[in-house]
Image 1: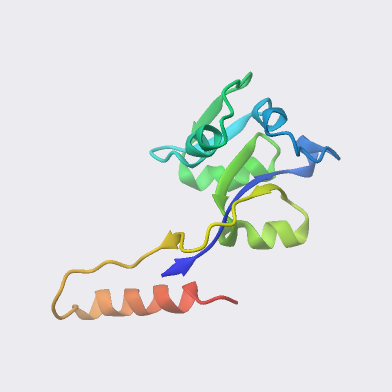
Image 2 (image 1 turned 60 degrees about the horizontal axis):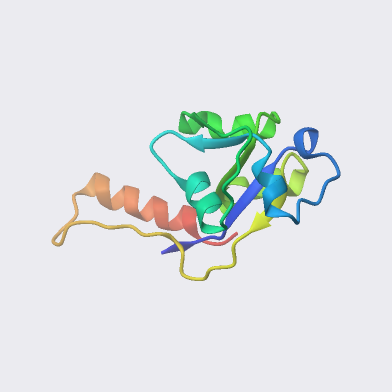
Length: 131
């Protein structure tokens, strides 16, 4: 299992110096969400945030983090996906979930794995190790 917390992040150019401790204030920002997923929508619902003046903009997955970096909206994503951007100041954490046990799992069929799959699973496990 590859564990990571969920974070809501935004570019300094979008969020400025505001702390956004009030979750309703976060809802007034434009939100980005990867097509076919529901991280942002689920996060807003989970926290009881109903009013969304701007709404959620759905984008292809490869554009989600780029759009957030460019200040086009905030995004709910896995912290490990944006850790370098946070450290470099390109994104700021507006909220972070502290749920243990959430993350990604590698699931394969029972039996012997073919060589390409075995190599891929090994690569995933190496990449998933905490730096």
